[in-house]
Amino acid sequence: MSDDEDPAELLDYLAERIPIAKVKHAHRNRGPITELSVEVGGRPLKIHWKKERLEVQPPVHLTAWVDLLLTRLSDAAAVDADLRRAFLRSGWALR
Image (spheres, rainbow, N blue to C red):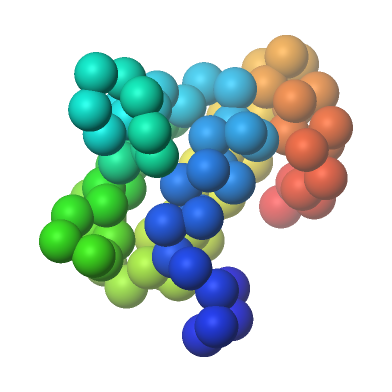
């Protein structure tokens, strides 16, 4: 992400490309995505839009969180053919 990009767009981008992601929207399941969670290998990763900024769990820098997400997804895709297909179809390279 560059500095001029809206960090909230990251939620939309990830929701479109991660088939196992669970999302929550603002009010009554409408509007922009406010939370995205992914459980990979029994370990949850969550990103939440709160008070005009993104909060991630586990609590690390956003770049490190995205790297952790991609690493875990890549590891899971190595043993799950459906996830691997979706991962590759989204244009991401496996690690």
